[in-house]
Picture (cartoon, rainbow, N blue to C red):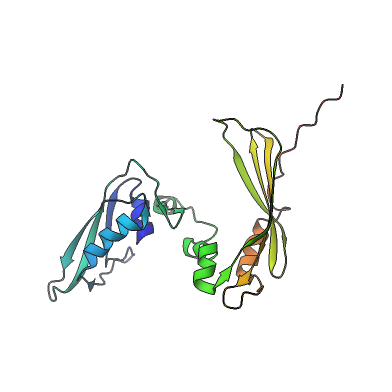
Length: 218
């Protein structure tokens, strides 16, 4: 709900609760008592920055206690907005053009750190974190960040993050994460589906890291 509202705030639009996108379009009425108020509260409290939306109930003809809700989401000059520290965007137009994400949004969300904890009760603390500032970066420089999986073991993985400006390396990060069961506080195997995603970003599969400029000898 909050992700949909945040995504629609980019261009504005109408979100319909109880109506499937289809095809075919289907009507699935929902209980209306208190629902419009909860939706408006979600928009104010769950979206960062909060949004002022108008949720209008549409009672069903045969039973006014159930029906549908039309959520009017105005265009926000502060868009994009975050939900759970993530930005939400509406990719439906890209789908109409034939583009498809490599990973469905729901699957990617489940593989995030909050998703791992919510679905599998797994924590991912950093046990090693080093940063090398190779070159100074000035205000106004636009940095390009790349991330690679260096190693993925049974219960831990090593990541490399590099930031560059116009092909020149500015910052290098080495991070080691350990997967821990929240219930036992002990190391736990990395989920197989996450291992397969990590392999897509293996250092051999990613773009070549930007080369450092060697100092000229005098």
